[in-house]
Length: 451
Image 1 (tube, rainbow, N blue to C red):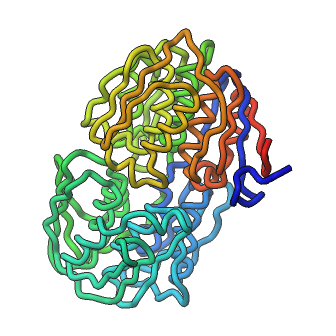
Image 2 (spheres, rainbow, N blue to C red):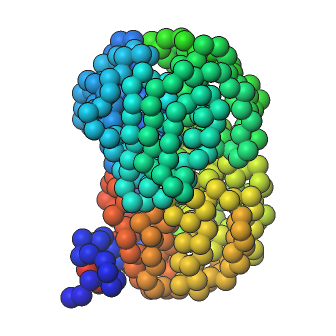
Image 3 (cartoon, one colour):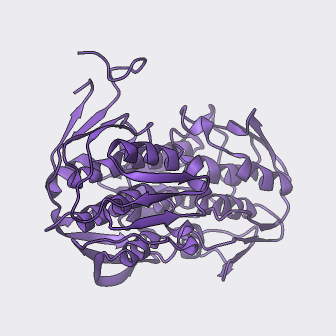
């Protein structure tokens, strides 16, 4: 057999997903990636020993864990989702003997840029070829306003070089809602003499603020402004990481578009700054029910039952865009299976994720016969309707895990198999995805060569 695509290596992973199948039973997806990242960062800066349960053992989170080991933090595990972090205190990190390699994780790189800007040692942050193309000026520029010595490669990309500097407080109004930028500046503000404030134009995920409070660090978060005083201490605590709503979203959409589906998703985080996917699906007519709601480690969680329902197209409210920014690839699949048009605007951020997610999804939807119109800040998708199937064919995920998983879900409503190229990075965010897909009732074969 020949390689999948000219110029590609045989180790490129391909998914061949059979049409049809169903989603039934009860599934718990892996722990929340955003919370897993932050548990390592803040646990390392805390005084004492922090225990984490439900840690996501994916490549992105493990890159953060290794970075802190490289800076002298003793971390035990992970073992079955349990991690024990022996914190070194707010000023206890040590310089790494080598560049900190962060793989494909934009969260790791952007948050660490802020945290390391206030250290008394120099650092270099690097990543894989995909991460090395992602824009880093959005964190570098406000950090420089704080006095940080930070340099980027030409084009405003990694590697990031940071040398010691005396940081000063900042009152920053973010031009675009971004939890990564906000968290970067919050972490940098821990190392200033004085109070900083960060104002966001629209609500975005607030895991950093919630977790800092859990570690006993005083800050104020009200309306769209975070105020934080530098120079405090963090006290070790226990963290229970809920299941990742971004991972659960693939199954929410899958059960919503598949006649006869009835699925329970266990222990899912329903932080109000993350439930855009639920709000949007409900507006489209989805049948999602919270079976029970409770709190774990300062984060609201729930078991969610999802059953098939005929979906209809909507104009997605722009205030929901920041709350669902990572879930749009699979929401595009929901829109493709709905009746009528779905219109997305105000989502420029999708252009600078692991891939240009607007264009990558549009290209794949075209392969499946879905009529669409790409816009600079979004897309218009004309759904095939609840009584029609999607087409089939070969889709390129461009190495983007969420694109690969979204088109896997599309096979539930396809008229033939869907082949998805370049799926290696699925493990970065969702280890065990293939096993759960098969357990739920879909047929997926993995290949290293052309099927």
